Amino acid sequence: MYICAKFHKTMKRIITEVVAENVNSALNAERAGADRIELCQGLSDGGLTPSPAFTKWCCDNLNLGVAVLIRPRSGDFLYTDAEFDIICEDVRFCREAGAEGVVVGFLKADGSVDTEKLRRVVEIAGEMEVVFHRAFDRCRDWEEALEDLIACGCCRVLTSGLHDTALEGKETLKKLIERAGDRITILVGSGVTSSNVEEIFAHTNFNEVHFSAKTTVPSLMTFRGSSIRAIQGHNESSAPEIDAMIAICKRLR
Image (cartoon, rainbow, N blue to C red; front, side):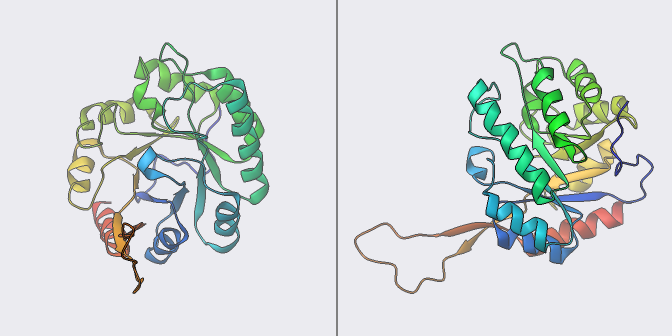
């Protein structure tokens, strides 16, 4: 059975992962002392594969773990052969770029895990960690799906406990963590903030947590134009919120 080399169920502290859809978010995560970032773009679409240049820059310049979301489009997780070919090429690029891991998710039409595609990605990934994303929250049977991920060699699964948010899914998250044992990491995510992370931890005793700390940064443009809708700013992971989350997690364990 494959066990992620960096996974230790007896870890003494909580591992923090920040979602970064731009370089400022990645830098904020590093400065705050986050353990890992998940690179993506298009969070408004649930997250899509980031650009190769962004991925390579983070792998070359940041001193923290870099996991890369591989998702070629928004919508469901039932992919055509052409889409899967693109996913495989992106995985190869991430391996060559020096990423710590890739984050993927494949389902069949009936809601079961597409183990054939997943095994292929694990094979291509080589020494990289393979993480199954929140496609897991749309599976038909979470117990069956969890065993499939373990059998295929996944290191972690990002999940909100089959609900829209981790807070709503805390009962299932607790069951997932108990069933997973030391075989796979349950990475708790979706809607986790400094205002609710303690409640989620108290109920689940999670080892790893995933959050975006998203805020809107106002545009610094002084000229806005008068005949076109103004640009309001951009989304970025908030340094104060990352600091707050990490401080709370250190206090919890």
